[in-house]
Length: 148
Image (cartoon, rainbow, N blue to C red):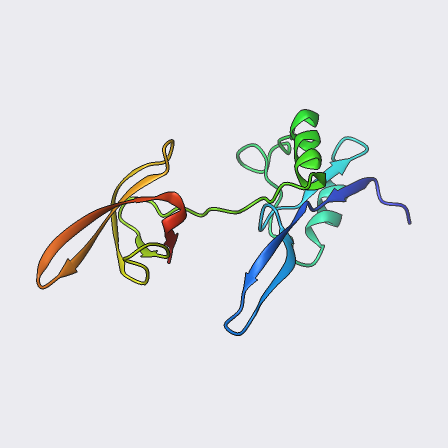
């Protein structure tokens, strides 16, 4: 039976962080999301067919199970251009204020603390950690910090 939709799972090539080696692997560009292009307007059968697919939890849409929210073609075209370009794409899951974070680069690498301030536009974070029963805060750039 022919389906009335196409799926799109953009993947990027990233370095895996294994203990004994580094290797390039393919991972989803947007973990947890799959784009579905419906060739016809959605009906209950189409929704049910999609929801019965292994791993699908829900269809993003308007409140209370309303119509799915379409992603503009320009956005899909941009994603296609990004994944087909030779430029290396990285995921950054920055910690929010109040969350635990680990410093991964620089002289304080390995230290864990709590993010007390952040400026996402400039990728600057302030992490506070306790040292000798005193709170010490240091300013870090985005590449130096990872969400725990």
